[in-house]
Length: 275
Image (cartoon, rainbow, N blue to C red; front, side):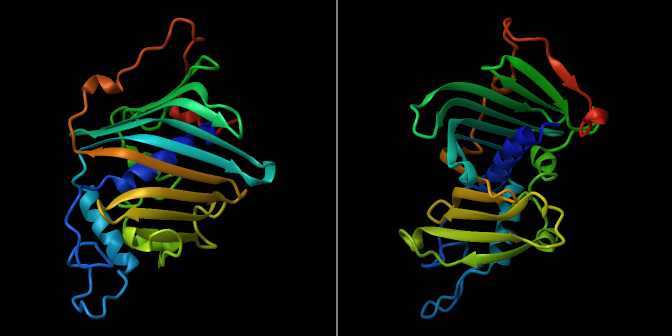
């Protein structure tokens, strides 16, 4: 499968998984996460441990049924002094036996150029990942799992990126050094930042150097993610106006291939990874 394709889809899946948490009351400042996590000593409130934050993410993501948001995805290549910003929408829904995900990019802004229409859609149903590029008009369909063994969208993405909130804490810590970062810029009381540094023997060592999360403490939803690849490319994701566990029209995940597109290219599971 095209690595750039699955990386884009995976990093968005990762971001959704880390952030699809229902709003809940804050506890005493400056921690503002669940009371069970925060220090009981209000005169000397200690920083919330990264392990406890991850534990709470695991608990809350289990209750996730649906999620939708506006998405901004920036890809930065410092070596070439280039950056591209894409904007669109993301939809996720968990059903009884499988999950569905759709990402619709609609615009692109390249470096200092004006923003332009640039439609590119990703649709995942647990078995197949469909990629529709409305510029090249080349549709592709990648098989992710066996038809009788559909996988959760987050499980599929975990092969390329760790799924915060869905990955077991013990497994995550085998791959990364995880720490809570003190905020120095802006208003530090508004965010919780987690920094994941790839370990030398990690399965992700050939792909990433580090991943950072900024979690909005008011809603306990993510504000930003920044992932740095081994090639020093940077992926930044923002999710805006999120809707958690709100009904999503089932037709949102339907799609048709326009008549002026080329013939659908189907990539079976056994052929992926081969040149």
